[in-house]
Length: 89
Image (cartoon, rainbow, N blue to C red; front, side, top):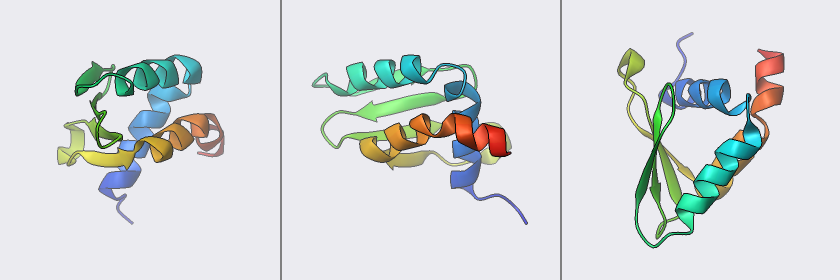
């Protein structure tokens, strides 16, 4: 079975976020509080943040994946649970 675009995006997020959940959350929360859009680069992807829509778009170009959009709440939930997904992988 082939992983979905969303599953691949979450796996990349897990690789980065599981190492330092607080740091990832802090960077994103700070950027979402601004009145403009922001882009945050990470090692394996970048995040595009839309403070008006309160969305986080994960961009990574490996495996020809399309950008994946998450609501801010969903993104923070994914970051908070990244360690448990990595342990269960």
